Length: 228
Image (cartoon, rainbow, N blue to C red; front, side, top):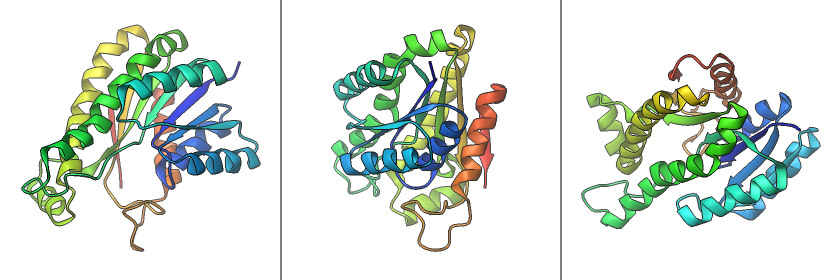
């Protein structure tokens, strides 16, 4: 039976490239996103490239929905070998004015949803010797210049979430390693072509990020990698 990669937060750019990379290496691809038409169109495009894929609609910030999602993917495609977490929320851009509930929504996706997905898929990941691969962001840095960028971009909530994710990956790497499950993060330090943040000046190719994820998955050594 082919291995299954669960791509969470599917859209143009990084997650599309990861889906194609792992699909080209023989994985069956489960695409997950809020919009049914987007994941279905993505699955069709992958199918046209001779990659077996299926779309699944889910609010990844909803723990109950996530648990149902993992069960559905398992029943439809088989046990999950890799979880790629690319989902995020752009709410709470200005922490001085955003309703506290908006920041909760950001963490529901970045932390709660990620953990719920991991826990639901963990029996599979342990049996498969699988992996959790997380898309990190340069906004997680504590550098003063990065803080200034987060403020200017109205991305303060996202910056907090990415910082929490960065620590979470390190903790999970140590906790899950003895069980044969790898956790790693690729921190993206430049704007990526084809993504929401691309306003025409992006320089980083999504395929380069996908290749880095594949390299980390294969080597299973470094917890963190950066790409720019």
